[in-house]
Length: 128
Image 1 (cartoon, helix red, strand yellow):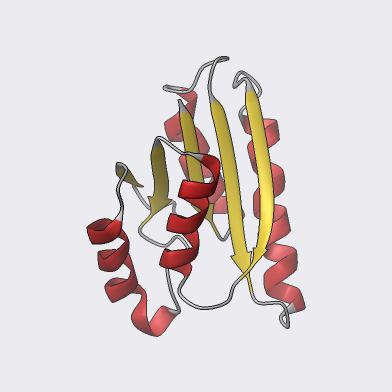
Image 2: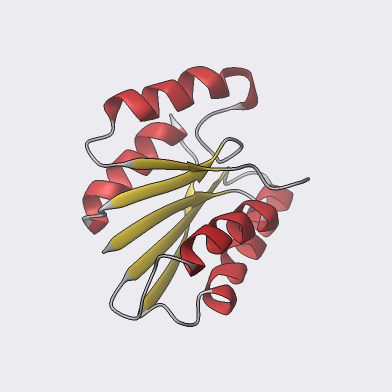
């Protein structure tokens, strides 16, 4: 099984890792992607910190990959493109995961759910 995780914070990554600890095995792959604007150093630092959580928390998973990608255009579209790129079996996000600018996150999240050709799991929001 190949899980693709969309994250934007340490808390989001931790919540999804909690979910995966009960499901992912040594035969699975988890790819964690964080999207951040190229011109926002703080967002990029936060995204990198979010990525650092996964390999530490998912030590029992066979292969944990992380990737920081530039946020350009629709984050929902970027996540779906990456799901195709890595041949993911399941996409994991939280209600606060990076699927669009804050002003359009509801419509972007709806778009993600409607357009995905793979199962999308919305993990409960972490406490912020």
